[in-house]
Length: 303
View (cartoon, one colour):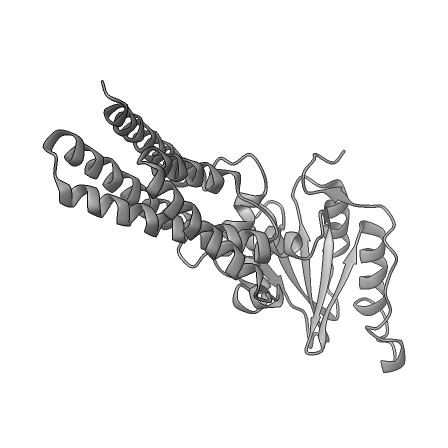
């Protein structure tokens, strides 16, 4: 087997393995609602895409299967048009990957290990098609990343488009609420559970419950879910803001957002502003609490 034939055969194997890997991810998404990933970057990136993760993976599957088919046509039938289309698809794919990587670097602030695996597969196929194709492909990716680095990105754009309401599992409203509060929590976090217990009564605030995973009604008894929700949005919000601990309470007003972290500070805050006489405007939302324990890490189990 010549070097060229060996390169084509390896390219076919890489394209086929990438396709099989995407199929496994699609099965996991369909079966469990979550894809396999080595880090939290995947959840952050998933929350930033317009199509659902299942649709996004389906597009990737079609792309790699098309590459595999073109490689077969070129190797076995010697179709020149297949080779030309293959090169164009590879350059287009690398151009798209350059945009995706740039977005992860400059907007999401986290790299998706699964996405990088698919990028590596595409890059390897590009490399195996020869030095010219390798130089062109590398130039396309580098140009996309360099161009993106010259732009200014605002994480607030994410919060405006994929806002916290889309991550809300349920809303608890009593009479004439004076504040809109969003509690980001986990069903596994003991500090979160104690905060939820405090919120079992009625108050002067409207509470939005934003979990970081799928939950059922047993976690919040007596509160009926309002709508479909995406817990990945809540994780992505914290990641973009550089917060890696829960519980987090967000007081969202017209003038901005105030973030309170930790069991003790959250309970103090809601007792002051939701369960007691409302303070005067001079004492209001400008007050900030210092971070003092009572938190669980997003990455590790909390005892």
